[in-house]
Length: 183
Image (cartoon, rainbow, N blue to C red; front, side):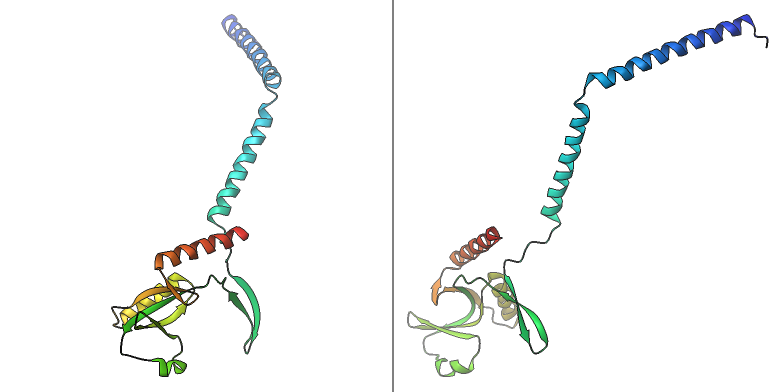
């Protein structure tokens, strides 16, 4: 095949350029394999770190917290049920609906379930419910207020003695954190 001299010169120049590029590529490949042997190891550590961080985020945000209350199976009429044993801190929350000097419900106390009478300072305090968790007492107090007893409020007792509400809430939260630490 006949090729003009100009075309032959262009082909020769392209072949020379191709040869030079191949030599440069070979030099680069050789330099990469000998320059940094720690690069693959670093990449493995980065991947492992990202996996560990992802697992940490997943367990922190997407796993259900363990119930601090012990689940005990009990047999009932309907079959096997779970019973939630609540750790006893000795604190009970009540919703107080009144404190009276001359109103005495003590003769009826045996027939009044979840109505509690506390006598102190010459007053008889009448409370409804006995809750071991503050948020349960709060929900019940809101319902009592909705019924028209706007003056109802939450009180706290420890082992039958009145204690401050803030002290009871702090004690409840410390009991919860202690039970979470034990898990």
